[in-house]
Image (cartoon, rainbow, N blue to C red; front, side, top):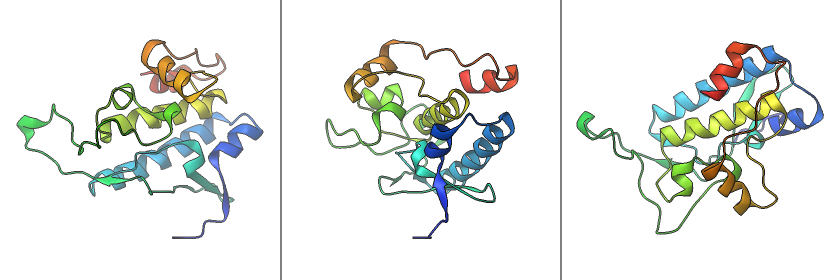
Length: 166
């Protein structure tokens, strides 16, 4: 694995509020990394702020593909079905606070569920906290399934809030 001299994005978020320009820059870089992986048939399955390392020059790298899986594209008429392979019955992999509702319900992670995880990361960058609370992983999972996210801070530009909340 490549040695990256930097710090996890989660640490940057914990230390200070990020500037709007930084949120957008990191978001674009993470999105580019996901597109790169997805076009090669790879789903990360554990995208979270601690799995993004930011170098001193501001370059963000998505790391820790240890839970990743390959998926096969299906014929266009089958695109409404899951693109990923199913896990063993009952097996949920990833960090619960970042998992999409359909993954929590037992569906396989795919590109679409990874977009959810990416949205959670963007929310965390913008708000400094996760969108769904919970004292335990189980209560966080229940919040994801049953509650809307907490509102984003009003200091964010409307366009950025709209992208994250979409």
